[in-house]
Length: 368
Image 1: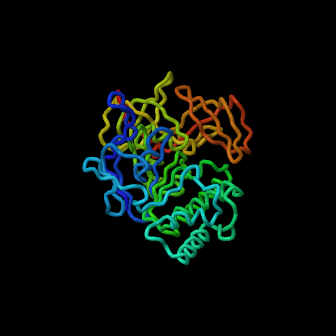
Image 2 (image 1 turned 180 degrees about the vertical axis):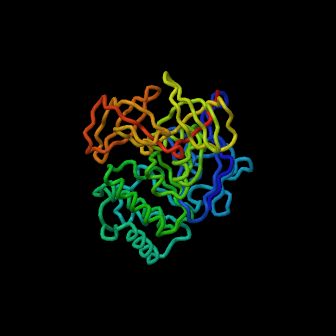
Image 3 (image 1 turned 30 degrees about the horizontal axis):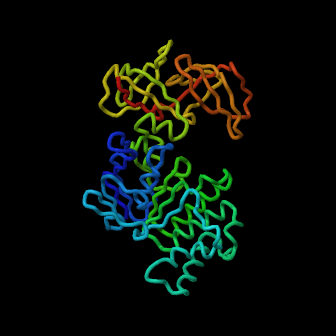
């Protein structure tokens, strides 16, 4: 449904041009929700705006439903209103002088050829029913809460039955509780309608909950793409690992290789050893970054019987977070974060032994 190939967008003059998007390519099959995930300034919203036709790309092609809508090299640029898209903006962009019904009906009223009044009535009510707003048709836009405005914006985006739905951080203006609720509702809506969607967000939870595939962006490029579980459990760079939730990053040097795993010496005074599962291509003395998620660390308060990947340390900081306590542990060579049961009485200076399964240690080759 959507193909983006070699997309480039720069701002500034010829002498000081800055590439905000640098050769981005991806495909979104029909019926899939695809998320562009990254920090502010990574180029994700500009990519979406180029797909929508709100920005002119400098190079590359954009194809929607088999139709090329942007190809600067051949002078092709299809205007926004002629692209088969619906869009939900971060600010919702609700018309303040129109009521709920007229806000949703607006895209149909400006279409040419004109739609019959009965068809507009039917399609608007169907869209409002999908978002649970069918009883508020004559409510003034200025009397809507943030969550209600978001539902109206969604109804307006789908009322045209677009081939492609574009969503630009649609939940970012909601409070935490409403955001969680709307994330569930949006997931159900996308699946119920069956629309192809391109979703832009900086929030990992939103991307993972809504998207079939996620593309992590940094400095105008896609640095990793895949299913949410895959990119979380197997990040290809330390940037991806640390951006997708908390991660402990230990710098180390490979000491020995042994049947699919390697023993690494952690940089530091002790040169503590830790082993990790490896794929091919490693040689002794290679530099590495060992990525370990806090939830993969098991904290023992007595020395465990098993000694593999067990490192002694001291708790140096504790933070109560309700369902768990996050602690900072000094291993001598490195500081790591881990979780402990909040019911357990612990304090700063408590001696612990940290253990991790080698299969849960991600070893990334580090440039010298």
